[in-house]
Amino acid sequence: MLNNKIIIKTKSKSYPIYFGHGVLSIIGKLINKNLPNIKKICIVSDKKIPQILLNRLCKYLKKYNLKTYRLSVNEKTKNFKVVNKIVEDLLEDNFNRSDCVIAFGGGILGDLSAFISNLTKRGIKFINIPTTLLAQVDASIGGKAGINSRQGKNLIGTFYQPDFVLTDISMLDSLPHREMICGYGEILKHSLILDRNFFLWLAKNAKKIIHRKNSKLLKKAIIKSCKIKSKIVKRDEREKNLRMILNFGHTFAHGFEAAKNYSKKLNHGEAVLMGMMCACQLSFQKKLLPLKELILIKKHYLDLNLPMNFKKKFNNREITKIISFMKKDKKNLSEKISLILIKKIGKTSKQNNFTIDPNELKKFLIGQNI
Ligand SMILES: NC(=O)c1ccc[n+]([C@@H]2O[C@H](COP(=O)([O-])OP(=O)(O)OC[C@H]3O[C@@H](n4cnc5c(N)ncnc54)[C@H](O)[C@@H]3O)[C@@H](O)[C@H]2O)c1
Image 1 (tube, protein in one colour):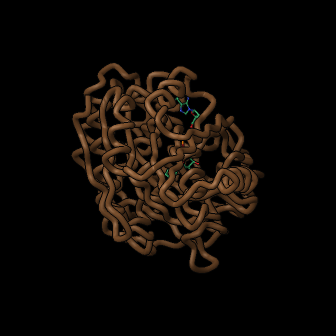
Image 2: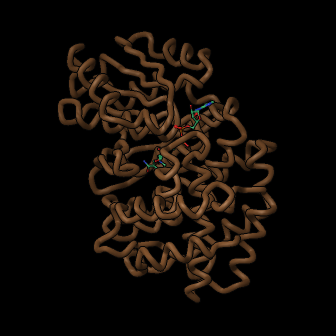
């Protein structure tokens, strides 16, 4: 059942990710091994995960003193009110530093629960059980913990690495197709920024992965993606330089999401896919990315019917809003907007190297006809 493990090494902490089908059932064993002093566990779970899975998790953990939340999840859940409520509850129940929070959900609950674990008594134990493809290939790795602000996405947060991650691929069985596409966006991102061969492999296999036709391929894509991200996080845990390349497409995406007020009409992964396409177009326009590479990427999007054209979702009036949110991005060091572009499939421009005047970017977005 448990057939893979990788170790994520960062300056602050090293921890394992366990992969496999049905590995949820060994959670008790893994806690005994990695965190033998836990007495109390708080599970922060997503309402859309089938109840039977939550019941199963609780059964595996029955020897612990359990506290459970089942939350309706959307970007607005990533807020101080929710954090405050859970932290206060944990304090009231006298959770100690040796006790634990488990995130049982996608990237939203992962970011939120990591933040809660970090703030409670300056840090209690944290286990992540990602249940979306996006969280399995991306959000559960690297320790970004945080919430959204009215001023923009993920603007309030810390870094807090988990004690371990348990990636059970069978959790994806109940995931809607739309969410599979979103997760695939981050897999594709990892190939575009760092691994051309992986991109070529995806070009052959992505249909089967997205449609869950072959679980071996799906697992291979998840593990490969985690390895790429862990390589980056190992070298730059705090996003001082190299880690910024993971933001490829994301500055656009955060602008798109915020301009739509984080509505379900556009979710994070879709925004990322459209944002990456904008970044590719801009890379081409700035003569960084050759036309034949751009064509290859567009073909990939078209073959898989991936969300590509943000213009289908936004009118020109909304572009001003997008730009105003992009100006507030954490990576910007001046009035200009910092972006990660690519030079070819598998290679980005240097982080912090490309900045653009907001007016020029606005013209670029208005002129897009993807
Ligand atoms: N920390 C990081 O490094 C990092 C990286 C990438 C993204 N993120 C964050 O992750 C979030 C996006 O993550 P996401 O796409 O997983 O979103 P999400 O957590 O909202 O999950 C997507 C949808 O799937 C549902 N869901 C979750 N698990 C399910 C299951 N097993 N079956 C059926 N439905 C299920 C959720 O209710 C939600 O509707 C964003 O807030 C983004 O900022 C963080």
